[in-house]
Image 1 (tube, protein in one colour):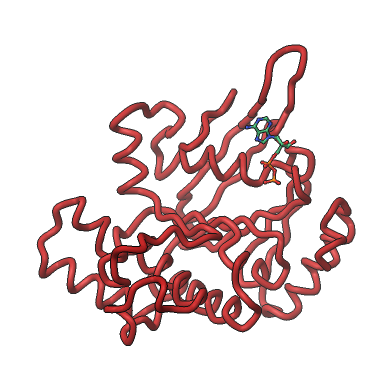
Image 2: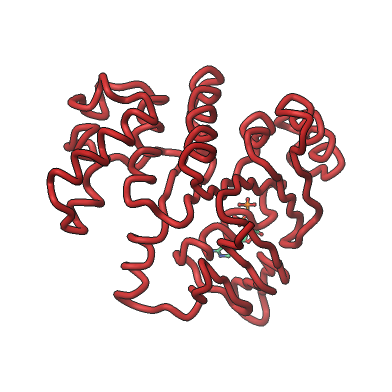
Length: 255
Ligand code: ADP
């Protein structure tokens, strides 16, 4: 499969000489086009830092990150904003929807900014809403819908621009288990039907078990990775739990 994302020898330090934190210590990894990958690791292992550098929200200290062949550590200013808008889709733990816009308007916003024609916007919103099962609530406001519906709206918003990569940061973090399962099934469908490439950070084994592959990091370094393979989600979930116990740290609190 073609490579979509490549992280090459990335390092990230915070602070100064007398008080240096090595948040990421030479990480290299890649994600293929159409792959659904998860990153797990104990608290403080560098997950958020890594995701933020891929999102161009934070800068690398050393190394390179290529998205679809472009070195994104070299992009600056307006080009970076454009890159973020056009190449990436974001799903955050706390949804980040605009309260004064309806579900439809929240999903459509990125295309309006890109000045896409209204008929095309409508066609794409309807398609994304269908995929995320939001057809019945398109005219509601965020305060009128459930947490699960909010996160499915955020997911529809993330795919509407047809980004090269969807970055999800603890997407089920604010959901109960029923809504978490529902969201993950929709994200899986998005990945399989639309061949969306997804990179997700989570501390939750159930959420991670929907991915094709889980990459474990510890102390800012790659620790190991496991693949789902043919055995299915339940067997993969058990493998993830085993790896979490092996890794230790505050993982043990959530098992
Ligand atoms: P995780 O997401 O796995 O919990 P983080 O990426 O948030 O881990 O943090 C990795 C390490 O970098 C931690 O030791 C954390 O304290 C440190 N760190 C993260 N952000 C900053 C920052 N802005 N300034 C200083 N240290 C930071």
